[in-house]
Amino acid sequence: MSNYVERFSTSERILHWIVTCSFFILFLSGLGLYSRLFNGYFNLFGGGQNAILIHKAAGVLFFFTSLNMFLNHKKDVSTFDEDDKQWIEQRGGYLSRDETHFNIGKYNPGQKLFAIFIAVATLILGITGLFIWMPTFFPRWIVQLSLMLHGLMFAGSVMFVVMHIYLATIGNPGTIEAMLYGNIPKSWARKHHPKWYKEVTGESP
Amino acid sequence: MADTINEATRKGFLVDTSRCIGCRSCQVACKQWNKLDADKTSNKGTFENPRDLTPDLYNRVRFVEKETSGEVTWRFLNERCMQCGDAGCMKVCPSPGALFRTKDGIVSYNKEKCISCKYCVSACPFNIPRYDANDKVSKCNLCQSRVEGGMTPACAKACPTEALKFGNRNDLIAKAKSAKKVIYGENVLNGLGVAYALEGPPEQYGLPANPSIPMSIFLWKDVIKPLGILGFWGSIGAMMLHYITIGPKKLEDDTTGKEADHE
Image 1 (cartoon, rainbow over the protein chains, first blue to last red):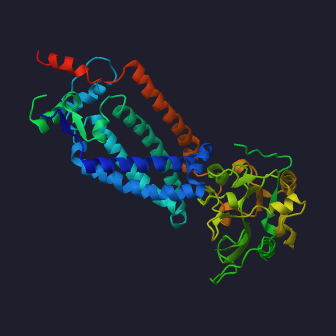
Image 2: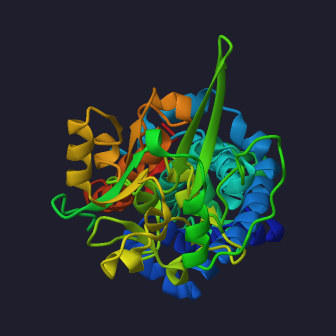
Image 3: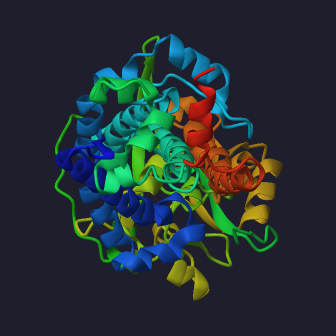
């Protein structure tokens, strides 16, 4: 009997890494637009004008793939049950060294909130991005507000992504395998997502 | 940001609207000196022409016709880049050297360094910058090259009534004040390089009474930008701190945890 369970299908994984790549292209090409302090990052793209072009193309890709990813998991990430409540009350056990056990389904509330935040941020960044794309076609106040919101959602997203990367790698050793190979050791599933483990294997965790 | 102005040597305009006769010599002289093409225009039943600034029209005379109780007032306002002391365009421009301050306090620009983001269009309190056919910024720079060569800007040189007076900004304003003129732009936005002596409230001329850098632009550049940078490094620091204080959730812990489950 296999010691592994499938967590993410091939198409889910490919979609995730497309979103990841477009996010980092957006991040690097947008840094110089965020502040003159980061002007040097324009050189990665051969100047500011090219960086803007690439930012726009990557933005379209990110907008649709990121929203697609959210819609694929909409049901899983937007419902919170009693066990999730307990997880939130104890901050998932992340603020203490003590052993904690939560009866968590496929995603814990932290992952759910991250998914919802990124979906909202994607929408706002996409819509404001469109106004900034063609500023002379829209009323000035809309473009001004868009520039502010675009910066705000960018800064917020980057902070969430730092946390996401930490928790998916060194913060929870073994987790990254789910997004790389798709299969995850049963011991991992039992520890982190016991309710989901029971659902997919029928075994009690 | 190295946006410092030496107020003692700052050059600028004092536009005395009471002297303007709406002849548009300034528009023509500007086009000639800056080698700007003519714009297609249309007749809308007023002498005002063209109706707005364009990438090839750095300054124009705004005609303000108003009828109050049977009497018609006709006012002229020379409209152009105000050369703000605290310039919204320079604040948002992400390309160093694309918009810059000259030693005379003028807000000038270098099209070759412009990256066509158009942020300056949104950040200007007076809606002045326009983008040309090559998608590069264009606006009045007070004939920077003429000023640095010791000449007056083309428009002021052509003005037959001295409605456009160019010179040391402090002197011009002091002189206008001693003549009991009402000055617009003396202190707002750290002083406008193009100040006006108006004959009525600024709103009548289509000027904002209290011009300022738009609030959302201020929040973006002065609040969100620094906090975002702080937040980025802060979140990385927090994750590192978490790792060394509380530590990761190691998988091995689970085997012991599982035994405990059978209590």
